[in-house]
Length: 318
Image 1: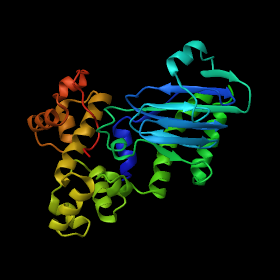
Image 2: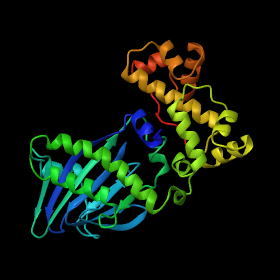
Image 3: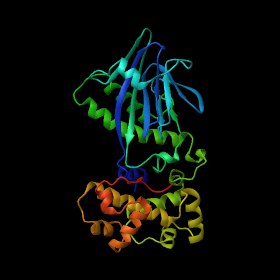
Image 4: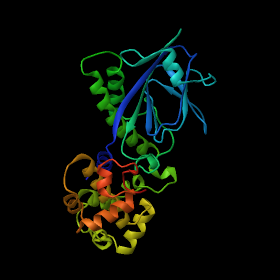
């Protein structure tokens, strides 16, 4: 079981293109408030700078990707000292055209930035992937792996001209881009560098990663700490200790959250009876399932299905 793919599917994770910024020269600046989701910028042409409150200006060149997993407020500018104007004001002064490009004018080399975000069910502080990442991930285009370079080039091309189906292709490429950026970041720095316990760290461990795969592949099975430890060839105490250290939750707590996440997805996407969903994710009674669901997400299954206001984050606890 591909754990990363399973979590992204369960949380309904998908990319959306928002707009493009296009300028000639360096006399421009765009300020963006905190997003309620993850955002990204792909530098399709030229050079610009990314500024956040807690880090020095970061130069971005053609082919670079900047991912902001928790949507931290930031600025994109043509020069590290350039004053930024809020995006809403820029868009009002330079209304996006049919291709959703904000033309900022100027004279000089072309700068084109493709901007997008990732939608999902839940909030960034509890999403199992995003909560394990730093505030900004910068993947240089020149040092990225060939697969990521290919995605970047294709996305830049699809957003540069109005070809039939270009919007659909570009939108789907954003999903691929996210996975490729995470791969590149893990290969380059490693999840351990964040100093945080998360299942991203655990995926790099052969035995704990194998245990996670087992649970994601068959969450309905009556797993115990003993059976999981045996299946990955570890003693029970060593497995429990290592799992908690790397994942930040006990095996059974993780399993409980995983089951509830899957149940939440089935409630959102299907019309199956609550009792059927309870059985499908491993609960022997609807009462036990409802109690566990309410404990994890703050609302009972029926209210969650109806779109109650207290819908909570979806994704294994980190």
